[in-house]
Image 1 (cartoon, rainbow, N blue to C red):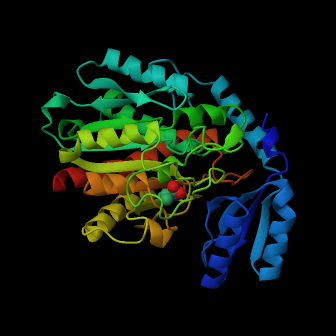
Image 2: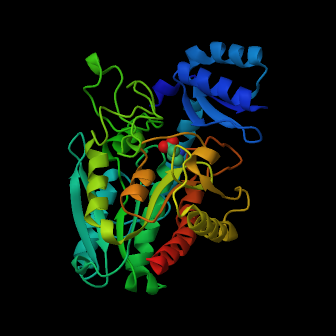
Length: 408
Ligand code: VAL
């Protein structure tokens, strides 16, 4: 297992000027590297580099006078370690079909069965809906949670989703925790009395299943037919939505930010578009949960600010503060801001689309990369952090849901 990542290294790149930002960015693009975070002055970036590209990458950095650090020599070893830790935790787990625990990362099949169980057990509150099928034909299910009749359409709707980027495993506990607190262990009933919820835990099922099979860093969906022989495949679903589509993304199927044939060419993004359309008139808040970086981001991905940017920022800060109050002390504080200004230009994103099409408040969360004594690679999950990730993110979501519902 993990053979394809044998010899892959992770570099930390530390730029000193905006000139270097562009230089590094362009070079990483040309080399088709998997950039985990872009470098800006004062905030080093991270990039995954296959063995055969390491020399040319290092030479480029040296010649350009860019500071860098080899952070992980061989990611395969870290992937094996993650497997071991997760397996050890899972062996002690008391998870059941209808009560998923927070000590493991659940598979697509487990989550799929769980959603159906909940709908059976709590028929007055929970409805499971199949929004459609993935490229490979897997069911894309989401929950409607409502204490009244969801179809009455009388309350504001909060929608949240995880795993649009399937390697971001730690985002799953965030949606599962929300479900847990809205259905099973209800301690703050105003959240379900005043709000109807839509929760989509596995937005990219094919990709997610693929990350369990030995390609842990796969990000896109699994669409084929874009290249003869399918040497490269998959569309970045967070570049496939119909908002500024194709303006800040890649037209190469080999790229990790490939935007697809056209806006909504992919079944997975189309399902989300249809949910948004269905509840357009009462969608108060939309949350797309990603990792990593400890960020709460809002649109638009081209740097243009929506007319309610001040309110967006304010509620973003309130959510971030709520999380920071209970976060693990070894993790850094959240950053709040516009996608383009905090991160980079990105088009066709889910939260941008939701903002433009329906929701007055729409955010992308970037959950923290948990740092333990052994690793810090961003996507890997320490089992000790799973419940905490769910718990602390929920603190932010509650604040956002209440504020957005009050404004609706
Ligand atoms: N980091 C996300 C992405 O790359 C968003 C925020 C742009 O898709």
